[in-house]
Image 1 (tube, rainbow, N blue to C red):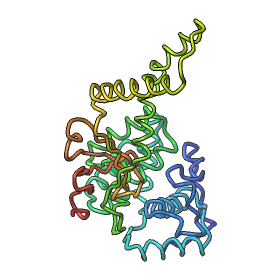
Image 2 (image 1 turned 180 degrees about the vertical axis):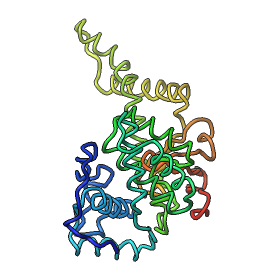
Image 3 (image 1 turned 30 degrees about the vertical axis):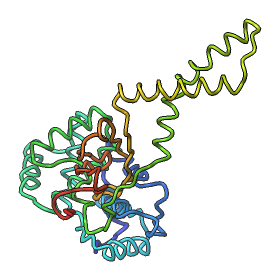
Length: 296
């Protein structure tokens, strides 16, 4: 447990002055007062965020009750998430500052911190990766964040939420076909062919020649069906399935399109846009196939 002393000296670094804004990576539906509304990833980010703010400027952004409630929920979900260390905070501050072209410590001190972080393994490295990701997203622009990520890879740190939020939470490994999304996709694809099918009727109406509505609609529908089938085949959107599931690491919902001859590839690699976790999606079995602790 961290001793929460409000009298702790504040950080004088202006670059880190806006750290206490709400973390952009936490879902809007997540409430600190109702941890059950938060995913495991959200809880771990809230927990690390609170410790960061305390170590960084002496402001503990959660009440004692909220902090304890989050810790209890993390323990109940089997997170086993470790606390932050002061040198990890200092390292992340320095890395973000350097990415902005600023310096908040000497080169020798920064290199020493790099050596300490490089020797970390397992959960400790995961914490650093998570902290670099969440604070980098808050405090850096896209180019600066990319630069920092490349520099951290040289230290063996894959900046992201992978690992830190990949704990013992049980996410479903099954995939479901979103038939409504498939229907909407084909409907959008058929719109132009259908309008082409109506064109002769409109043309005859302009000339003052009446065409039976049933005949006109039947012709347009038939032409649309034929052209849509050919268009889908040409663009390899035939035999489509849009499989939905949850990332086994950060629990983020995702969708993946399978289409083409015989339904497309049997397995497709998917990389989560939130945490960077890579897994294989099996179309035939409708299962998420992963390695490590999520192997099925």
